[in-house]
Structure formats: C-alpha cells, structure tokens
Amino acid sequence: MFTRIVSLEVDSPATTIVMVSDGPIPFPQIIVRDPHGREWISSGDAIRTEDPTRYEVKLDQEKFAPGAYRIQGEGCTKANLAEAGGGDWIKAFAEFTMELPKKERTRRKNKSTSPIRIYFGIHKHMHQPYYDTVNPAAWDGEKDSIFATRAGAYKDYLADAIERYRQGGLPSAGISTSWSGSLIEQLDRCEREGLCGGQFAGWKDRFRAILSEKTLHGHPRLRFTAFGFFHPLMPLIPERDIIDQILRHRDLVERSFGVPASRILFPPETAFHVRMIPALKQAGIEAVIYDSVHRSRACRDYPYPGKEEGMLPPNPSEQVNDPVDDWCALQNVWAPSKISPSLL
Image (cartoon, rainbow, N blue to C red):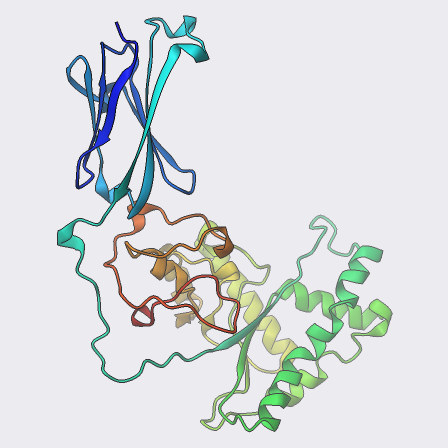
C-alpha cells in the first residue's frame, strides 16, 4: 500500500527523474517547473515503471533551457480518482539545475582583435488608428484631445531633430521614420477641418523643407520607410493584403510629402515571419528592419531579464543556436535586454 514517497531525485547530468515510493502508486505524476511558471507534466505512459515502486521520467534536454528547476512528484492513495480529495494526494519536492550538454558547450567567439563598434540608427514610428472602424469619420472630444496633445510630436519632433544634428556638427546623422496611412489621413482631416484648435494647419510644411537635405555621404537626412497602411500584423494576414497595404502606403507617402517611401520595410510591431517574404518581394521590398532580440533569444544561453523585456521567456525548443560569450548591457538608453555584438 502506498503511504509515502521515499525519494525524489535527478541524476547528473540531468537526464532522468526517479521517484521511489513505499508501495505501488495508483496514479503517479511528476511535474517540472521553471522559474517563470511554465511546467511540464508527466503521467501515464510518460512514466516508466519497471518496478512497481520506482517511477522514472526521461528529460528531453532540448526542451529545457539552462537554469534551476523545481520538481513535484505526487501520487494518489485512492484507486478511484472520482473518490479522491485533496488530502488523498501525497507529494514530494526537489530541485535540479539543467546545464548544457558538454558536446554543446562550444561558444561562438568574436575572432576580431579590433574594438567592436555598434552603430545606432534612430527610427521614429508614428501611428494612430481609426478608433471607430465602422465609421472612420467619427470624432469627439476624446479623439480631439488625443491628437491635440501630440501635435508637437507629429509636426515638429523630426524637423527639430534634424536641426539639432545640423547645429551639433553631425553631418552624417539622420533619422528613418514610419507613419501609418491612417495617421496621415487623420492629420490631413485635422488640417482640412480645423480640428484640434487649428494646430495642424500646414503640418507638412517643415517636412517638405527638410526632406531634400542630405547627409555627408549623400543619403537623405530624413527617410520614410515602407510600412503597412493600417498598421497590420503582417505575419497574420494574406499575401495579397500585405502587398496592398504596402502599395497603398507608398502611394500616400509620395502624394503627401513628395518623396517615395524607401524599399526598406519597418514591419508593424516589428512582427516578421519568413512566410511574408514572397509578398514583400512582389511589393518591391528589398530589406526589412528586424528586431535583433529575436535572434538573441534563439541562443541556448540567452540571459532572459524577466518581465522587463516585455516578452514571455524564450521557448526552449526554439533555442537552437550556439551560445555566445559576449552578452553586454547597453548604458544610458532604455534597453532591458542584453545584446551580443557578435550576433549583430
């Protein structure tokens, strides 16, 4: 008769969990939890029971990132689960640390002996949706306030930045920017109808004045990137819609500012998937601004900073890239995630 769990252990390296009881367990279960709350439950056929008092679970190391884990081994003393209550379950707990297999501990090193240089590109993204999609013409005091309080950001921020580059002796400095079509259309309406107290009268004038400026190397000081007209999550929409969103946006930018949007795409929310590529090619896109954190998170030893990153922990099954040895934190900028220069 099962009355207690005698031991709950993990071998070294962590490949097998072994739970030993003082008698056969009607319903054995072994649960592994990581520090972020994810859990893996093994029961039924997933538990090997060659001995009626010894229960083994094999750990698939590819599913587990390096780090500390907590184990919960448990069993029910009742043969009929329908009759069991909370007090009929006996539990034991243990901890273990998962390490990378020795054969995988080769780390990618930066072989260059010269100092690492990181070049920062500044991108300013601007968007406002149609808050009433059924009636895009809807307008009220709340919406008026939303746009009025951002008038400076929409009209002057980018032009002021270019002016500071000029005055600060930065001949190579510039900015890329992405504006949704829904924002541009609504700012045009504010100008046309005198909404927001008339703050948007001539809102494009400063843009047109600086769009002809060039950097020392002949590049535009300000460049509109390609974008999706209504700020769509492109990996989730059909190819034809991706193409239409980009082409509609490109046409509006050229009509509004007199310059074409570039062939470099800033995807809304930096959401990208390889399935987008055929549609992007048809729309004339030549490059995509890609968030490097996704590449970093695919490394097996990625130093996940927690919820401050704004994303869930990496999925261990997707951490298939070799470890790197040059993680570093950026200073004097908001950057909760560490970066690896060798991955850039």
